[in-house]
Length: 119
Image (cartoon, rainbow, N blue to C red):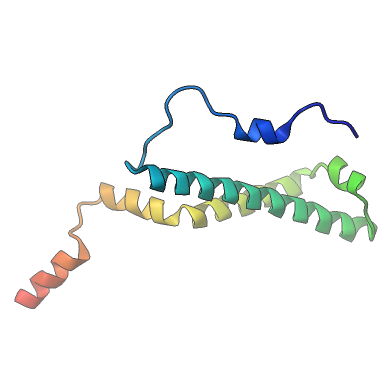
């Protein structure tokens, strides 16, 4: 199979414009970018493994062409979407909790603890 697209070059291409700055620290931004890229790759691997498992259950034996040609039925697609949402929720749990704490006017735990000690 010939492929005219240089995927390595495409993966390394820079987007136009300024990079987003969510964290205010270039090192943290790079780490976040790396983490999300790895999370995306793991998600793809999970779907590919699901494909292999489903094909093995259905056929008993498979080859690469079977995997590449597989299209999940609506039930399998739904199950995958639920698993992916759960996976993303686990990865982003800390961020979600931080966002929720910003919406709720709660005192930090250290402050509550100090107030309780002071009596």
